[in-house]
Length: 385
Image (tube, rainbow, N blue to C red; front, side, top):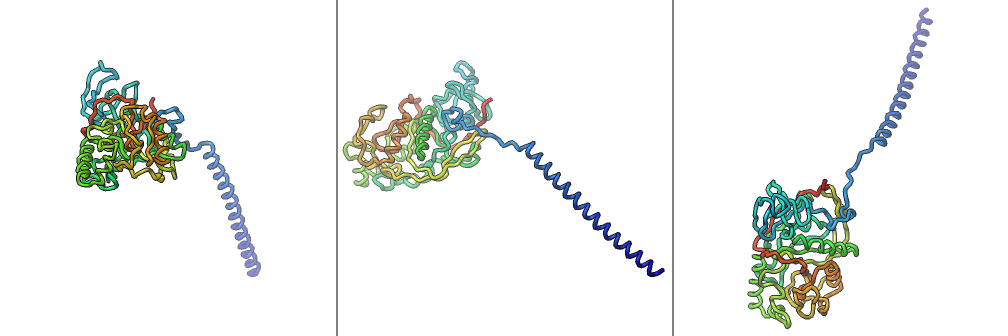
């Protein structure tokens, strides 16, 4: 009896073990079936409900006259400016503001901008207004050297109280690009020509390098006074400024210059090594992230006969006289290429500085540049509804 009981217990133990093995195997099979089905369902959910990525607009593909739309850009009064309640001069006057006053541009309607100024809305005629160039042409390389360490020299010598010094603030945080950006004011009517110049450069793998647009009158006077004194103290500088047929006035205007009027830009040319597509608001834009500046006739802002564009002075108020002028022996292929881009876009070179270009098609609005522009009012560019 005892032996039969042992055999029975052993049989129960074997049956129990086999049952556990069968249960474990069945559980594993069920788990695999569930896991595979669940994985399939997840894939199906991903395919049936894809995550939609934001689609950004290429403003140029839409026929834009700039790289980014003007809405959200910083604007500035270049002369005394009247702000109206509606886009007509018969509407109520809200404010009259002084030159240098800044605001955010919201939209454009003919000759008018709707603006946000101190959280209020109004309308201004934009022919008296600057726009901030980096807001609308971000692919240009901006290096506003007079704002941090002036490169101005004469006959390759430092100008006392000028060279290597900062003469105004020109960088501030921009909500448009979410980083510190240069503030580079230019009259709005001139901006499309600078835009076209940059597009011509980009097509050939090049980029503009803008060193200055608006320059405050006080800074202009500082340069003039110290350059004059240096020419008195140093015969080499005097010779570099006055060798026939030139004089100091060709290298630095001794009165109000086109830089104060918002009609001038100083720029060089570089080879694009890398360019990236980035986004701001509803739009995408290109930015040059690496470049090599070409060897130009001189360093930027070298005030001497070595920097002259033409062999003889040219009527600075004429839009065509430069066409019949003979290039200086100092001009090289890159300076000539820069000039080609600029003049094909409607800008006019000056005789004494290879880097300086004017827009002579704009009627001067009376701005004398006796103010500073140092604040950024930029916001994100949005689709206009």
